Image (cartoon, rainbow, N blue to C red; front, side, top):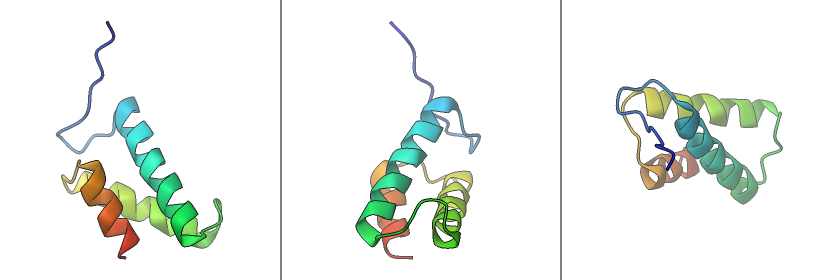
Length: 68
């Protein structure tokens, strides 16, 4: 069985990046943001800032990105 590590320290591990990418993709689709656009880049920065600030919950990150 593979152990999946999810950070509680603000350091993004591979599983954390998968989570952040999933949230990013969902929010881009919902808001009609084109991946690679300046708006998409800003969304990615915001996601990483939330994560680095200690917010690790998928729903919370998604909700904050949707309302930013």
